[in-house]
Amino acid sequence: QRSNAAPADAAPLGARPTGARLRRATVRVEWHTLLKSAAGADAVPMPPAVAADGTVYAQGGAHSLFALDGASGAVRWRMHTAERMGTPTLDARGERLFVVGHGAHLYAV
Image: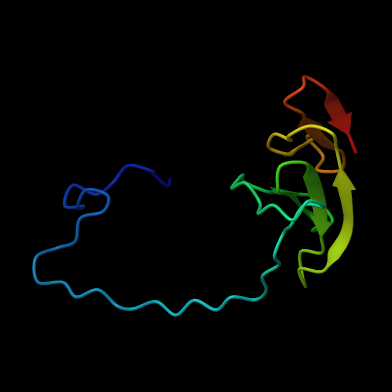
């Protein structure tokens, strides 16, 4: 049997044992894409949604929604709306995208 309980001698989350040295992690950015709305406004930081096929849906600027290729970051399409967009959310299968606009419209993509 496996247990999710922490061992009795485990340090609290974020703590490190006395005398321990932190190792530097090497992080490699695979791609990045600048998301700009049609008006050129910078993206509002909102978490993206990732579909089952790897498509990344992200808000760009105040009134744009982007679909990006998850492997390359290439823009697949961009949708512009007349209102500010909320955080994109996927259905349970990861196949259909829903976004609520701040004008109380629900968009299904």
